[in-house]
Each structure stands twice: as C-alpha cells, then as structure tokens.
Amino acid sequence: RKVDLVYTRVRTEEKLLLEALRRRDCAVTMVSDSGRVLSMDRQPASESDTVLMRSMSFTRARYLATFLEMKGLRVLNSARTISLCGDKALTCAALAAKGVPMPWSFVAFDEDACLEEVERRGYPVVTKPVLGSWGRMVAKLDSRSAAEGVLSTRFGTGGAQDHVALVQEYVDKPGYDLRVYVIGRAVGGLRRRSEHWITNTARGAVPERYEVPVLHAKLAEAAAEAVGGDMVAVDLLETRDGHVYVNEINHCVEFARSIEETGVPLPDLIAEYVVGSAR
Ligand code: ADP
Ligand code: ZN
Ligand code: MG
Image (tube, rainbow, N blue to C red; front, side, top):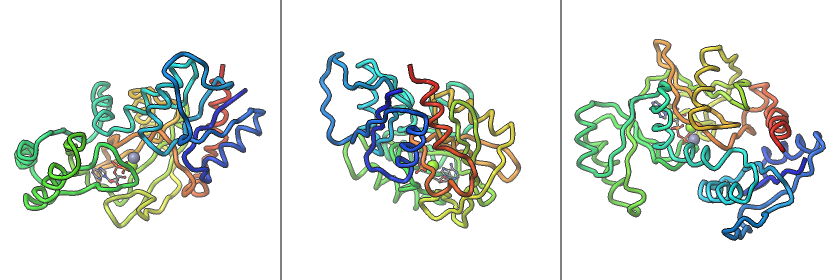
C-alpha cells in the first residue's frame, strides 16, 4: 500500500500513525500541508492511492481533501466529512437531518436577533465559534448582560464570515463529558473529568478509562454516519439524569494526551482501517 500522510506538525500522533502504517508494510510518504501547490485538473497529485489527512488547519484540510479527491485519491476522512465536522453549525445540521440527539441549537446572523432568541429561550446557554477547537472561545451565558457582552464581541469584531452565532442549550454535565472513537465502528472511548464545565483535555480535564456502553456506541456510530466519517472522535454530553447527546465530531482524531488512560490502540486501529480501505 502507498499512503500519503498529510501533516502540519509531526506530533506524537503522526509519529505513532507513521510507525503503525509501516508495521503494516505501507510505503508512507510524509507530506507537509504548507508546501503544497495543487493545480485544478485531474493530473495525478501523488503516487499513492490513499491519503491520511492529519492537517491541523481546517482551511488546508478541507481544500486539500477536496482537490486530492478530485484528482482521484481516496482521502480519510473525506472532504465532505472534514467540511461538516470542521464547522459546528454544519455538524448540527447534519445531526439534525438524521435525527441524532443533540442539545437544541440555533444559528443567528445578527446581534439583536440573536439576543432576542436567547432571551426567549432563557439562560444559561452556550455559544461557541462555528470554527474552533480545544475549547477556545466557548462561552456560557448566564445573564442578559453576559449575552450582550459576548454577542457584541462576536458581531462587532472580525469580518462578515465571523458574524454567525451558534447558540445551544447548556447541558448540566455530571463533571465530565465522553468521547467515543469511531474507526469504522465504535472502538472505545474516554471520559474527560474536570471541575470546569469545559472538559477539553487541552484545558486540563483528566482523561479516564470508560467502557463504552452499547447505547453510547450506537449513538456515536449514528453521528459518524451522519457526517460520513471513517475515523472520528464523537463527543457526547451526558445529563445528570442520564440522557445523552452528541456535542461535536472531530475529524482529526487526537490521542496523545489520553492513549495510556484509554487503553484503546488508536494508531493500530487507524492504520488497519487505512490499509483495509486502500485500493
Ligand atoms: P471544541 O471543538 O473547542 O472542543 P466543544 O463544542 O467540544 O468545542 O466544546 C468544548 C467543551 O465545552 C466540551 O467538551 C464541553 O465540556 C463543553 N460544552 C460545549 N458545549 C456544551 C453545551 N452545550 N453544554 C455543556 N457543555 C458544553
Ligand atoms: Zn472540537
Ligand atoms: Mg470538543
């Protein structure tokens, strides 16, 4: 098998994936996402037939996946999956279209219209950038004055492309959220425990072992299917009374901070999936 591994930085994840692919007799070419110049034609872009997309940049990942697919390569995850998962508003729409349980959500394009709808629904609510990760700029609004502050920043800074607010029900979690890895199927997961309501490991949450119950596995698989994801990390929010919602779907699975706790051999599972799906 010939595989291109597209990267931004060669992190622990990319090193482990490279080793796991090589152990399976893959000829892996490491391709930096920054040096690429792609012509808009069907000229082959690579000697490989499969691309493992590990770019950390949504812009580069989405465009590169689109163009490499156009040039006949199989890209994991696909351009469609990257486009849907990288934009939280589009993720919500894809989940809603398939009836996958999620916190109620709305988008608004204007400060006053958004504030009015928040007031109508009541506090607390969560708002987050449609593009973003690692818990950055995720905000909980407890009051009208908080909402006014955050929304005036959202709509008063940046360019037209930034002037969209995604607002969601605040889910009162029992001190953790859940992440289920779907590599073709649900293969395991982890619980992320924190004193803070934002439970990203990048923000200090502690990863814990979590035996994924069938219900959660099925929910995560349904979420992955809704976005056509081959290999994704599905974040679930559990309520204190045991309901469970899909919060987001990550198309570039990160595991360096949690591989020991979870006991899920993600590099091997991903490499196996790549090899199995290569033409
Ligand atoms: P990111 O892509 O930055 O990880 P998330 O949507 O996953 O964005 O939000 C980061 C964290 O914030 C989640 O892991 C969760 O702990 C918390 N969070 C996000 N949305 C909600 C919500 N609607 N209710 C409660 N907690 C939330
Ligand atoms: Zn995310
Ligand atoms: Mg998240």
